Image (cartoon, rainbow, N blue to C red; front, side, top):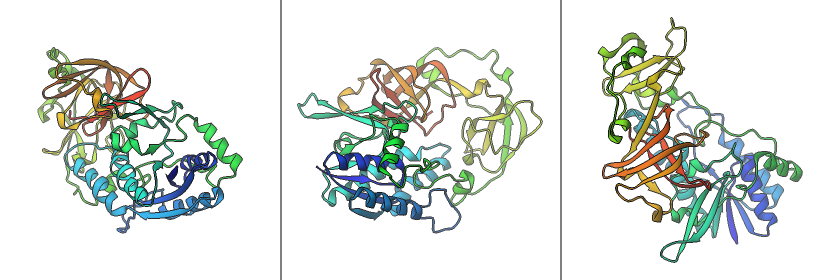
Length: 390
């Protein structure tokens, strides 16, 4: 098989390329330039020039051709602009999920196929399975990686059958220590390279500074909500009521300080509030972008940080294998996560005409609109995902 490897300069994609080459495949590397900050106002730790240099050295060491493709225009339009738009609307997006759906397994995939590739391989810690679908054609499964500490299937939760058809994940059966060991034994230049962090292809950034490139700062009030606010509130009884977040008003709490724009904050955030006089840290429990208000609560166990359920709108429900889609009024039990590396949580999914409800066995901290919820079966298959509406 002729396989294109998305070679990032990191150890994971390097070992993926090495394993495929050793298995006898015709392998070539493609390095993606997905971010080029010409404005000078944003500098991530992941400088693409350095990454490209390491990737080229890895390709030479393995003995495979090296290609370069500039996808920065697509990345800015389909990932960065999406981020700006989401934050402006009071949502907290996940750029890594979008990067995989829109860039790695779309723009990059199409480029690799144009170079004659049969498949595209990446260094993700996840696995791909195949079975026969109801129409007799192959149906592809997205499975969690065997390394529970590094499983990256969540980042691929929006992939389609067509995208998975061409995808290979050579290190999905390995642990990170095993990958490091293989790289060192082979003398790969990336063997001891630290894992990248921060926004996909951008690196670690000061998020408010990043957002201020397009979103204007605007001073507003920080309202503290005290615990006794929840005393005596009527208990929710229906699924719809349980999934509805609490909507606060200025009159529900006390002025605690000021901020420079509600769009720069997200639920569960602790840093950046700069408000003293409290025994325990303050956490953001809600934002109101329309009225430019932030609501906070004291302590990491504040009731405002926890919710039992969430809803996903019909248009945002995604099933990796369409034959697994739930019918209206159907209920199923799944294991769910609402952020990367969160331990899987027991939950019940309920399909209604107005969307998909996820009701957790235990209250969840920091349920945030704009993030992705992903659900797995007991065998580790990621069956679907969706954007948290509220």
